[in-house]
Amino acid sequence: MASKTPPSERLAEWLGHQRWFATKTRRIESVTIMDVLPLASAAIAIAGVGLGGGAVDRYVVALGRGARAAAVEITDGFDDPLFCRALLNVIGDGQRVDGESGALEGVRTAAFPASLAPGLAARRIGGEQSNTSVVFGDVAIMKTFRRLADGINPEAEMTRFLTEHARFAHAPRLFGQLEYRRRDGSTATLAVVQELVPGARDGWEWLLDELRAGRAALDAIGRLGEVTGRLHQALAGGADHPDFAPEPITDADLRAWDAAVRDQVERAHTALGDSRGGLRVPDLIEALAGLRGVQKTRHHGDLHFGQTLRRADGDWMIIDFEGEPLRPLAERRRKHTPLRDVAGIVRSLAYAAASAQPAGGEAWLDRWQRDAVDAFLSGYRAVTIGARFTPTNETAFRRALAVFEIEKAAYEIVYEANNRPDWIAIPKRGLVSAAERLGLRWSGAA
Image (cartoon, rainbow, N blue to C red; front, top):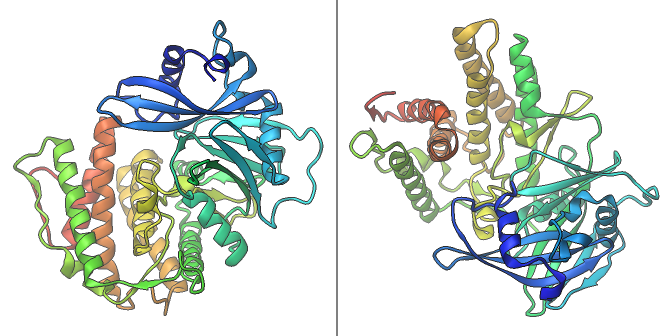
């Protein structure tokens, strides 16, 4: 196997420079090729990356033909349309590709196109952090999960459910997935292929353009609230599907969620270097009490405007159901209150207000943010009246939502402290605002 792959030192250097490599802050101690699966003009290599501290992460590396010789530069197979089309065919035809330690198996859904044009154009798209995406004509998009984790990826599981069971019209249909199965019986989702939504725009970029043009877009934001509510109704409709069947929220759930939020706030304090001041969070179970007996369900898990598409007809699509990529698969698949998704959009509106610079200035944006949150929540509540996954009482709904806004804002503080410290004031303001709605105060600057 060593003769087919680049030397580990050169591969380690190459890996460290890839956008999708998740642990750039840790030293790569070793790279071991665990399996090689040849396909067309390249080969899929499963690389075990040893990190400082003894951890080993597995990555999917597509080695171009030249990359497997020791004397030449490493080339990424996903830049080669021939290889990408071959990978698509593995899924579409239900093929199996054998390696030395495992096999790739394509699994298609009934939604896979009956026929694809020969020589369909394949184009890799940029800008992604943890995945690699390739667009095929105006028909399909394939997303490869570069960091491999045993178990089914929520992106495949959720979109299969929405495609085949719920027939949800506001998420791209799943055409199929690619599984890596090891000889020991373990399975990991390597890639998914989904419907491409032609003419759609990134929802985040669309919203910023609206704000910069001085347009409040409140009707569109209210419509996204409705679509989000419909998504949660669809995900709550799996009573005959164990992985999607709603379950009642118990006291144990409330205690676990209370602890998780307070832990996240402590992480935010640490990120801020805030040892004495900051938000001291008491028991939040009282604020969550309105959720007791309400249903917990599967939910998106990382919902914000960047996970939406604005269709050419003016409606919305929701995308990217894998959850937060750095969290373990089991945690991402766990049932929770869908109010976490609602909090994600509320926080995203705050980021939009801070990022746009319309002619109306800061006062206009402050007013817009309040109006936008009200529009989204009004749309969401209008379509979830009577739903068993949200409190019927408005005060209970708002208090529980504020708890998960605190959780999300605290998570954002940690992220910004590590990546964009100049932005840290945005989530800090959000945390203070949500805390004040629960009668909590931040000791120190707001």
